[in-house]
Length: 334
Ligand SMILES: *[C@@H]1O[C@H](CO)[C@@H](O)[C@H](O)[C@H]1NC(C)=O
Ligand SMILES: *[C@@H]1O[C@H](CO)[C@@H](O)[C@H](O)[C@H]1NC(C)=O
Ligand SMILES: *[C@@H]1O[C@H](CO)[C@@H](O)[C@H](O)[C@H]1NC(C)=O
Ligand SMILES: *[C@@H]1O[C@H](CO)[C@@H](O)[C@H](O)[C@H]1NC(C)=O
Ligand SMILES: *[C@@H]1O[C@H](CO)[C@@H](O)[C@H](O)[C@H]1NC(C)=O
Ligand SMILES: *[C@@H]1O[C@H](CO)[C@@H](O)[C@H](O)[C@H]1NC(C)=O
Ligand SMILES: *[C@@H]1O[C@H](CO)[C@@H](O)[C@H](O)[C@H]1NC(C)=O
Ligand SMILES: *[C@@H]1O[C@H](CO)[C@@H](O)[C@H](O)[C@H]1NC(C)=O
Image (cartoon, rainbow, N blue to C red; front, side):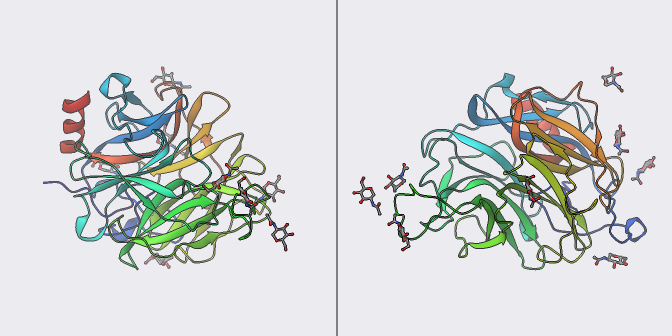
């Protein structure tokens, strides 16, 4: 039986269920170990010099040890747009589709001006992804749609999809003048086909912010990570009052996790309750490095052992998988 569970599987999942009461305490990370049969992790990344989508499977149930699938060749190559994608995010379905459907969202790598759409692949087995669709989510006065990601909002019963955009004055139709700061925008969708009118989620003007990732801690509590594009660092915020609640920065208003990084992505450990892995992309260096924490009420991330974390992985995401899923991925591309 497949029990992918409704329990904060990854950054992109907000549904909460079946968390043992004793593992919940205010502002802390809800345990999901032993409530599911998660035996490993699927990592979905792009590589800097090759904007296609690559899959990596964990070596056993180890959150910081991965090997390339498909001999290191891409799994998904876009057929639409300009033929390159960046920043893939794998999103677990919520609600009735929980454990039965996954989405991968990305954006067009080379068409920055005028690319207001996101690419979407859809799968019911993590193996067959079909052909992507390209859906416009942003208004015409936006300069771009970068790094789309999504989280199931259980309160709303829909996915909250978010991305980064910047805007030009309405009369600057050629987008040659000065734009506003990069901000995080969002829309709701039930099916990744039709999206609500986009709205602003995070506006820290004049600071530009991009690359938002949201981790559900269960219980209406969340951690979110984003890049200060002005300073090129990544910082963390916490909310105990929902996705649109009050967000504060553990460690104080100027606290950051690390500098010279982007593409933050956080995921819960399958085995160690409360243990979170955060990966940060050293975009001018050798790609993702893993960090670890077991208390997201403080801004204290230790370097994790990178020995078995592949070099050169760029902005992507990680999904916990069951034995059936692990075996299927391994059989198909291992
Ligand atoms: C847009 O309007 C502003 C304010 O009237 C003006 O200063 C600016 O030059 C205009 N930009 C373009 C591209 O026409
Ligand atoms: C946009 O560019 C075109 C072609 O260069 C030009 O004819 C047009 O006047 C420009 N529009 C604005 C608002 O600057
Ligand atoms: C941006 O896209 C618009 C609409 O396609 C086009 O008119 C304009 O020339 C482009 N601007 C730049 C700087 O490429
Ligand atoms: C981003 O970094 C700049 C430069 O260090 C700083 O002035 C600004 O306050 C930061 N913004 C946020 C939202 O952290
Ligand atoms: C989470 O659950 C605990 C225990 O039931 C409760 O004390 C706490 O207020 C809850 N937190 C939120 C944000 O709902
Ligand atoms: C899960 O079960 C194992 C074996 O009973 C135990 O050692 C471990 O501490 C448990 N983990 C959690 C998070 O409760
Ligand atoms: C998380 O778990 C891993 C593996 O057991 C361990 O090496 C790491 O130190 C843990 N992180 C924290 C913050 O305890
Ligand atoms: C890191 O992991 C490797 C491989 O498991 C191991 O050989 C090495 O001792 C570890 N380093 C540290 C500092 O724990």
